[in-house]
Amino acid sequence: MKINDDFYMKEVAGLNVVVATGESAENMNAMINLNESAAFLWKQLENDITKEELIKRLTEEYDVDYERARVSVEKFISKLNEIGCLSF
Image (tube, rainbow, N blue to C red; front, top):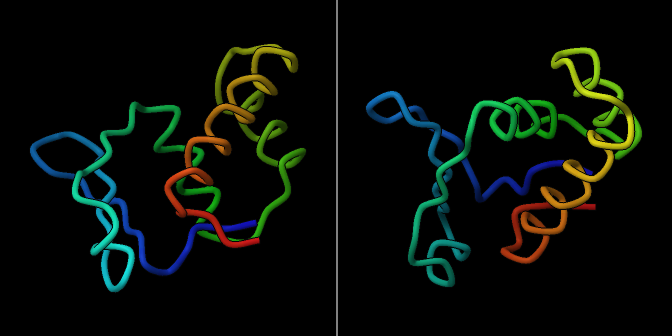
């Protein structure tokens, strides 16, 4: 899975914000603010990656155990999928 080409993360005034372009912009009338770990995951998803690899990278980047990382990654993927940010 990876981030859909219609979505971009930009830093605006020190915040990591996701914006939609193209047809996705017509369906999404808001911006998404990402915290530090969500921005890290977003960057990983800019290239095709598996859920297991995301979990592994999150545990390597942050002091978090596998189970907590798994739950966080699953929630993040679910939210991104709800708004159409992911391509499978």
